[in-house]
Length: 456
Ligand SMILES: Cc1cc2nc3c(=O)[nH]c(=O)nc-3n(C[C@H](O)[C@H](O)[C@H](O)COP(=O)(O)OP(=O)(O)OC[C@H]3O[C@@H](n4cnc5c(N)ncnc54)[C@H](O)[C@@H]3O)c2cc1C
Ligand code: SF4
Ligand code: SF4
Image (cartoon, rainbow, N blue to C red):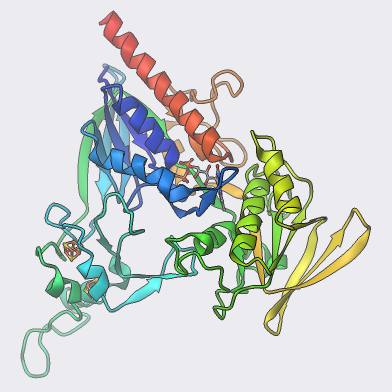
């Protein structure tokens, strides 16, 4: 067996697993589909229940991964194929590294291209509440700190390809060769790193074990029509609110309404948006929303002390160390009003959002004219997980989460030999549980490598 591991996905689960293995002296191939590592943790403001700055506790680990001599990091990359070697049981992995249109060996990460690029588009990392440039890194703390060019929105690439395909005449009306438009980054890059001819590349790696850590997504708002279907700009999901609270976010940590930039004075949080709702959403509890909603309500009150936060809940689940106390703090110290009941609908009226619901404890209907609504939308598996499951013959449950071979006693071991699982790809969980599981998966790989050494 080759004593080298592949980790798929570099959120906090993949990062932790990769570091544990690499720090024990074994090589790791870490593959991440985004331009930089960190996953959703890089989007969070502060973390419950300690209110640590998420980026501050994450950055030492992302930096360690970036510099680790035992970790081969492939970002902006995906698994093209994996073949099991019938002789030794190792895996032959083909990785597709997407063209960034920038030569990262020449790039110093100076940022001049991002500054000079004249075009902005909506940023997925900022959950639609902030823009990014067409040439971009995910965040100022990105690891690696190398930008990529979004080809679909780049004027130069689109006009270059139009000329090459004959959609634009090869010569202009004066008989001069047609030139691609823009090229500001090309002009201002001090190291000539911009490479519009770059193509995707395929890389081959051989590994003896695999950890799958592909993470989660949030239930799309457009599948919640009773909550505005994603069409009301001031009705956002939990990750968008994290970006509003984050010092590195588009408002530098100020809570401002996306529609008009005003501070919202009444904010309604709706837990279980799509969770525990088999008809309209998913049947299971998303586990983390009670806690992150309490955190967001507390942080909102810290930013806007004169504001009022309301939380609609079905029941509160706070089964972690210090979690119950944290929830009590939200109500008792920060004055967050908890209303037990469901919101039946919400709609825009003038510049307010009318939230209609029921308070089942006092048995009365409630109507709040809110400035902003935050939906704690259900945690769902990444769409890309299914492709990985098919490639590796992994089992998934009816909701699309990976399943372990023995959920009680071997929760990180898949039914396929030498393939392990970690993090929210297995189901919703918070950061401490994710990290514990990742270390568990890494320990399984390490004991396998050790056994191999002893028996070799
Ligand atoms: C609004 C909100 C607030 C939260 N606040 C807190 C909090 O305060 N405290 C707390 O403990 N938890 C919090 N959480 C939970 C926390 O986000 C998760 O526990 C944690 O981020 C899970 O990490 P992960 O690595 O499992 O998944 P992810 O962060 O989703 O990482 C998965 C990574 O895999 C990559 N990937 C996916 N598919 C592929 C593929 N096919 N090939 C290559 N790469 C791939 C993704 O791009 C991503 O980088 C919060 C969650 C939400 C939604
Ligand atoms: S060519 Fe122009 S649009 Fe394209 S990334 Fe460079 S500066 Fe931006
Ligand atoms: S201007 Fe050039 S060197 Fe600077 S970040 Fe952009 S590509 Fe890299």
